[in-house]
Image (cartoon, rainbow over all chains, first blue to last red; front, side):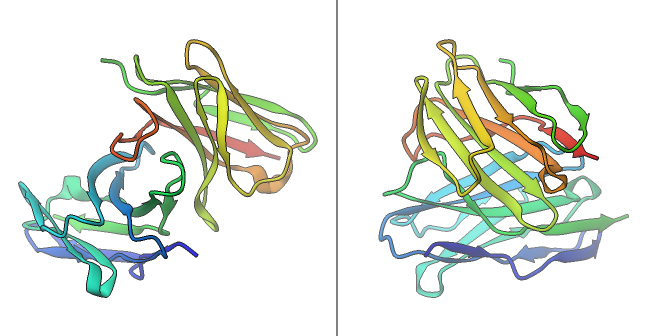
Length: 116
Length: 114
């Protein structure tokens, strides 16, 4: 069965610290897609990144970077030099190729608080 | 380009009533999915629509239903409301239904059942 685990429920850091949010997934499919979404207090989920199972290249976008390791079924997200505006709940999600694209399986989320 | 809009944003109902929530996707998007978000269960998939057809349904009772119109707008309906239906209901739209299409979410409708 497919499952996404975000073991860190809440993380609190001080501005400018680096922080890594962990995501571990389970799937029997060989083709799948992984996502990270950000949910600020306003409630709207904001898309951050999509990665397919055949692309294990790490990605960097500004202060954000993602580390995808199939060997450990992990897709971790690092924020470098965190800022107060990064405070939000972050969700990791999985979509299997044999399932419908609209059915995202989400982890429980990690609430990140960045204090000034 | 306008994002996904959901109406109403907030709703208070009593047990036993029914409710209809509306979602207008981004212009040109033909796929709409609905999710329920609660503190206990997190984000759970409700259903997915494409071209007025339900493509997939999550593990929810039959009290939860939905539909999509020819202009891609979607509604979801919950009948005989229960206290446990209190949640944030999120709608997401995407261009098509391939896995390379990103789902863009609306701000949600917060439903409170008293």
